[in-house]
Amino acid sequence: MYNFTRACVQRTFREFIRQDKRLKGHSKWANIQHTKAEKDAEKSAQSLAFARRIKVAVAENNNVTKPSENPKLASIIDEARKKNIPQGTINGILEKLEKSKLKTQTELLDFRGPGGATFIVRLLSGNLIATKNSLNTVLRKNKCTLSDGKTKGTLFDHFGCIITEHKNNLDAATEDAIAVGAEDVEEIEDNGKFYRFTCDPLRVPKVKNQLESLNYSVLTADEEFIPKATIQLSDDDLKRVDTLFVKLKVLEEVVSINHNIDLPDDDGEEEVVKKKKSR
Image 1 (cartoon, one colour):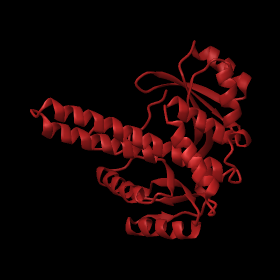
Image 2 (cartoon, one colour):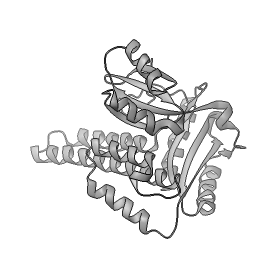
Image 3 (tube, helix red, strand yellow):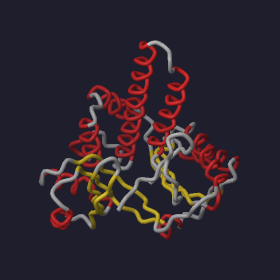
Image 4 (tube, one colour):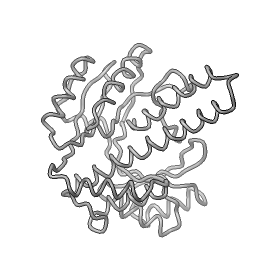
């Protein structure tokens, strides 16, 4: 899955890498500033990601801002706390949503992009008509076309996805997956080993809580659109995808993006996104 905020973080990191190369030989103070800026950028992007997820959870559950009455919201807030997002930041988001007279809505749209790649975007807006118009402008200028809405079911599988730290072995994790009502579990590697449990999207909060009761350390719990098959793009088309994401970044209403592109491994300089390697 292509996560929009993750791409923003990676792009920010690359800019800092380029800055670091230019700063070599300068004072120790400059290097300290660089390190602090990198950490601040990562923290800011992480806070933004959770803010968007909280807004989606509220919008999708009749604008209920009380975690005790909104299981999905409670799950995201719990995850945010584990990532050291300040409680004050979380409360501030909820207070704004509670006071807002303009209730937000979410919607999924799919479109064709460079090289025939398919994208699914999740929108969060208080004015979906205006947001769609803005999105259409970006798509038209980047030679993308909206699909008929059937792509989501034919080219992607919609899952709830829960990533946990590695524990015991895969056989034991499989038994636990059955016990908590997950549909599958696999071992993935990305700078370490983890488990990826999949389930019905509506059951994410319940499965997450049950996994935690079995002493699994849950890292993330959210919905994903997994492509049934991926396509490879030329270097020119990948550059067009890069440009497209830069343009979409301007739209705050774009919460997440999924795609079916088989991306090459990231070398830390050229590509915008990195495909998570899985078994």
